[in-house]
Image (cartoon, rainbow, N blue to C red):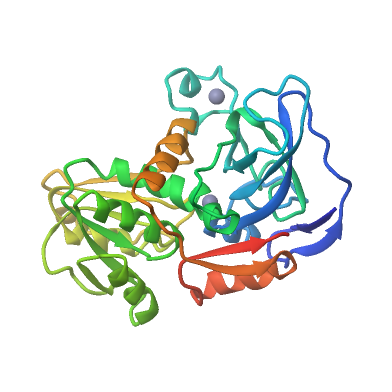
Length: 329
Ligand SMILES: [Zn+2]
Ligand SMILES: [Zn+2]
């Protein structure tokens, strides 16, 4: 099968013929149709994540069909459409798993990071961590739901149910999904982009955001909460300065540049700063149901599989609007 492979961080992915992977017990062989390109893939390629399994096929927003269920696989049958997310497997026995926080598992597998992902014609996945996908999304449109949507939704929930005004820093794949959900739930959304990124600001306005501006600006009102999707540590003090008393700032990414020192008064008055790590399967079921209920649309820029490096470059430079997706077939 054709796959785009990362041999070492800092190098471009290389197109390679690999043997067809074989599903083990409880696994499914997925005929990949589309795979989203997430900022985490970029952090992996740029060497910003610790200890990837190398060489590795990146990609953890996989949409495809079940070609062959392995022995003992339940939940999916031949030909079913399936989504494969970042959380590839958990141990089920560590303290985090046993306390309903499998996103923090001590011995997890992550798709496209510690097991091969979807920048390939075929992929193998543990069926217990795959999702059926809602109708109403074609394969390309569904792909960004599987990480941008899932992690975005987890970050959104951790921002708090009481947040009537929500800031979002970094208006890319995750933000454009979360903004639609927040607007549908009656919240006012304030979108912060790279200064001068009028294309992202226009997308934010089109999706119903109350305000869109540069991350160097203050919003017109103090915010109840803010989510930072951009991997820029300097946005942490900026967001703390934009939320009001008791406000929460959620860092939604897996990697961020160093956070500069900031005066304690930015955190004072019970402001909360926290991160979001990975996802639970429950997050996935909730997000997919929410997306279908509110008819959330995804904006995608589509690349052929062989152009995975170009997609990563466009993501790195902020050239694309919405979510990048590789069309595999
Ligand atoms: Zn565990
Ligand atoms: Zn991701």
